[in-house]
Image (cartoon, rainbow, N blue to C red; front, side, top):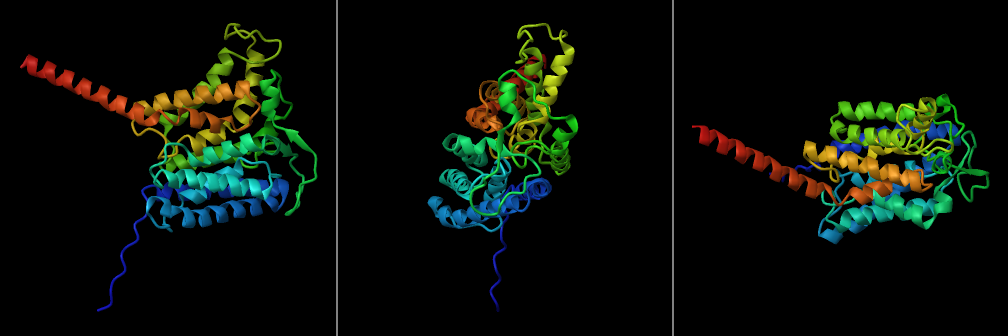
Length: 336
């Protein structure tokens, strides 16, 4: 009798990573609209690098390449979307290789303590800041190969960190018609992706809502705006605060980080109370990086900073739940 083939076991987070890749498609389409075909080739370079690196590096933890485990490709796609459309291909290759190495060195999918895409992007940001944080203007058709010899401008976070207000209109912010990372600026598309991931059960509101609330609340209470007292009462200068909040929410990678990075199933805590604390800490760290650095994607550094706490938070939550259960049992038995 013919021997039956063993059923291929999909990874635990198979659907999450495929949905992340699916959500990258409309963001990539917006980049194609603004910059031409170069972002498509950049994405292809990242995905190919992730695939090859996964095949080669997987034996680090005595495993083989798993075709039904698309996390490396998802990390590569997120890294590309956080880069400027003018980024050289070698930066994409290096940062993707680092992401795959981080993932595989700790045992592969489901075992890494830090978000691999955040690590890869952070290394590229520290190694090539002049490349990573200068962006071509939307509508500039970029060459597929070679150096990008077009004027580049800094993102809105440079103006915000200096205490100023950018000049981009609300419509341009919502549609992505601003200089910035090629996948982080189309706010309406990012919100639609967030709704899709929530419906699919991948977006944890217990993480995202505290994260967003802290990112909004801190600038409202402690505005970094020239001509506005930092310690003024929250009900004063309301108009200036609203303008500031508009650029805090609609520029940079704040929303992108909340939708695509914060809820990574391996790196976020498992328990609801732990996720709330994690979201608060992530929002505070992301705001601090936004205040004191010019990086548009400071949320990646925030993820690395708070990435050491999820397991500890889960342990503390389990211990607290056990103590509450024991107290209730002691009270019940005492009453009997």
